[in-house]
Length: 316
Image 1 (tube, rainbow, N blue to C red):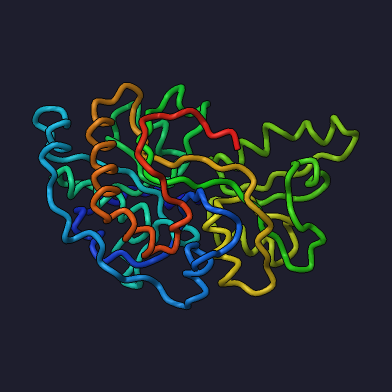
Image 2: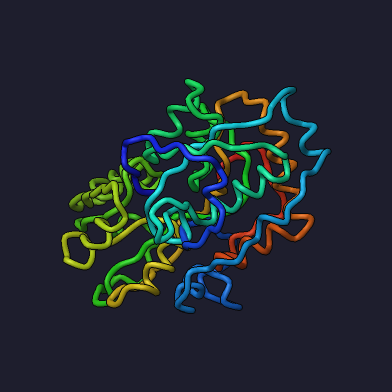
């Protein structure tokens, strides 16, 4: 996920009303676009979704009853700016929209709580949870074993890591990072993609090859400019976000999924909010609202069967 401007933006959650842009989610489906259930298919349709899938949700007393006593409002941190279906602004420059926005709004409605939204850089949100600056984060946070050491998660979708490149590239599928040796790889700062790439540079030196170079950017636009202008050879990012970007920009191709990750709301370790959020997500799955959100954003292949609290990292 890209980095948002460093200034803090506070707004009543009502401003996140008519969500309408595509950002990134996680998927459990295949690489194809069967049934049009991917962000790529949604992008190809040529429009930004404006369907209201949240306002009709009613409070669920059972889920709300799991909140800590006296909980009436929470502060959520979001990272703004990126490739749909992630969080961005509408044309008015102030209304936030995106898949994570819809899920956050929906959970708040189920729990009957008010939310204050604060904008923050993606890489700054998780460290700030422990200090209590935010009650939780909602920015397509992948659940990894490393993150689970200091963060609690409540899952609401399944996404993953993937690759894209220019159409003239000889690459067709990246199944081993050794295939990237000697290349320039563009990705977002502070992401699981950056961590994966940095942690595995040794595959090149182990094979007697030149290391690939990790190029990190704080803005998605800079990543794609780097690829289009030839400064980078490959992009590593979220699966649905890549598919959407490739459908929107000429001269690019989606390579493949590389590693799937559950995605969840992020909390301070030991949070007392997890059970209520898990119940709220499961309520949305049961009453059909969950499917409506996925259909809106073209990410039906990203569905989970039930929410979990800090599950082990997927090993796919």
